[in-house]
Each structure stands twice: as C-alpha cells, then as structure tokens.
Length: 358
Image 1: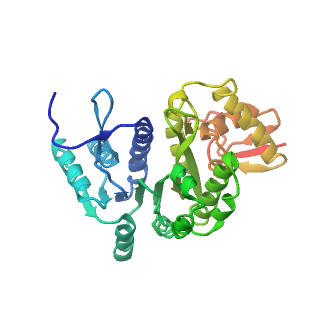
Image 2: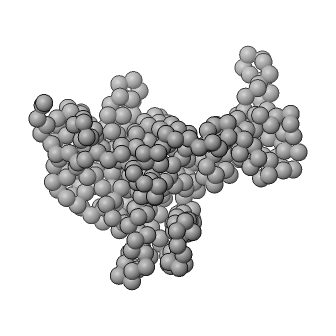
Image 3: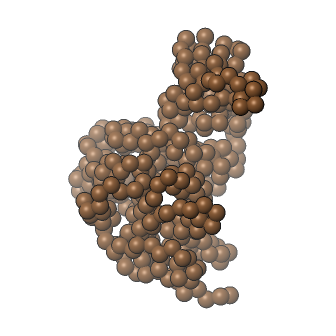
C-alpha cells in the first residue's frame, strides 16, 4: 500500500454524507453563480482535509472537493474561484497544503492560521465589494457569533452552510457558564425559553429560535437533520442560508438525492422507507398542503416556490408535480407565454405561469 505524505481522520458516516451533499451542491453553485462572477469559497474550520474509511480508502474534505470541482468545470468553461481555508491549528493547514501538493492540484488555496471569527471579520473589514462568497462554517464546538453570520450574508449573492452542533448545545444550554456564548450564537436570549422544555419540544424550540433569528437577515433558511449512525437521535443540523430561492431548492434536491428523497439523514436506518414515505406520498401531501394554503387565490409558480421552499419539507419538483396534477381539478394554469418557440401549446410549468386555485 502506498504511503501517503499526509495525515487522515476516521471517516464517519455522517461526515461522508455531509461531503456527498456538499460536493453535489457546490458544483452547481460554481457553475450557476460563477457564470458571470468571480467567486470566493471560504472554509471556516478546515480541519486536516483527508479521511480514511474502515476499508482504508482515502477521501478528501471540502477544500479539496471545491478545488477539484473548479478544475473539472474550468476544463470546459472558465470559472474564477478563490479558495480560503481558515484554521486555528497550523498543523491542520500544513496537512491540507501537503494534500494539494500530493494531488497536483493547480489551484493554490489561501491558508489563514487564525481564529475563524477574527479572520472572517478582518476580511470583511478590509476587503470592499467582495465577490459572491460561499462560507462553510463547520466547527468542532459552537462558538459562532450570529453577528458574524449576518455580516457574511450582506455580501451580494453570499451563502452559508452552518454546522449547528445540536447535541453539544442542548447538553450545555442550561449552564450559566456558557450564557454569553449562547447569546452570541443565537444573537439574542430567546433560547432561554427552551431550557424549561424536554425532548422533541426542546429540540424544536432550539432550532426555531436559531432559524427565526437568521431569517431576519437571510431570506431562505432551511436546516437538515443528521442523526447518529447507530441510534434514532439527532446529532447535528446543517443550516443553509441563501438569499435566492433557487439556492434553497437546489440544496434540498442535493440532500434528497443521497437520502432516498428525504431532507434528513437517518444514519444506519436511512434506507428503510416507511409506509407513508416515497415520492407518491410526498406529492399527495404537497397537493393537500397547496389546496389548503392557496384556496381562492392566484399566484405565479415562482411565488409559490418562494413561499414554500424553506417553510415545508417539499422539494420543488414535488410542488411542481402536485400543481400539474391538480390542473383541471380545481386548479387553472394560465401559461405565459402560451406557446413554445415552435408554436405548440405549452404543457409544462414555468416561473411566470399563473396558478389559479378555485
């Protein structure tokens, strides 16, 4: 077996899933947003950049995944992306540099040996008119400041993928020693109302307290649950922040792609579909939801997606299929334009089409 010149961490199932979803999404983000813009990718907690599974196979972390996605895309279409990796441990950054050299990756990341919050705020303080920026905030703990997330989202067309370490936060939430840390994380003290709750009610309260605060500065916020690999219990959540509905829609699709149509990861039981799960059931539920939500109203298709995409678990394709299935059964679709470029009557659904619910 070839001796590798860099260190690796154990590749856990949750991390593998996180990377699969991330890799699928970041490829699309670079292609779509990078078509007309220079881009920045900032990895807030770089780690050591490489993993080894139980079979000895090597996998790579987000900085390498982004670099490889850029190289693959730019072989056909030009994309300009600056990769920045931040980590407090210099040995982690040294390891990432060794990986890039070993893999002969032509893109050279900017490596910053600093605390994430200080480093990102220094960038925001000193660089004006930042290009669209995707920031992956994947800490080991939970010392993240809401104020910093808000500053990042002020960058035009920016997005954040935040790993919210629910288990750790939930464990220490009632401790007075971390009250200041929690206030900085949630951006307020609304989390205190959750301490009197238990079980699922407490979990929902914590998640919604965080989401409600983020929604004040990010138009679309959706969180994805990751359970422990071997038990039916929440481990952490990935919060995705975007200011365009398309970002939220694509991220949900990327997540569902690897999770049997679900927008949550259920560990070792992921492949077990319940009797009320599956695409047909999701479309049926979406149909009932839309009928109730829009009875007697008319909206463009895009308005419906914008209103539903981060407020429900439905994928955009499920919403579209549900609307199409209701056509002529209490729903009228006014297509704009009515005909295709070849003069045929349109049958599909586009953003400007008006959906009329009786």
